[in-house]
Length: 90
Image (tube, rainbow, N blue to C red):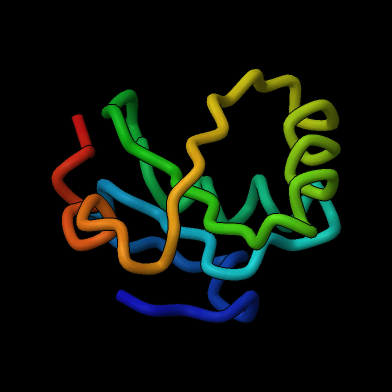
């Protein structure tokens, strides 16, 4: 499923295991609503936030606002790990 912020609120889709933020939002509530599409009903899920080097501060602020301490992993656009993001899911 690919969705915009329009789908971040008010929809329910079963079986979403991975949410990838292609463009990190500046608002922590939007981040939580987007991320909330995964890990429903006590299941595990994975949220990946892709960002450019100049968006690192935005991502760190999002982490702080939502109370998470997520690992920042540096990758370049040709990194083969990007092809398998979905396989990182629990």
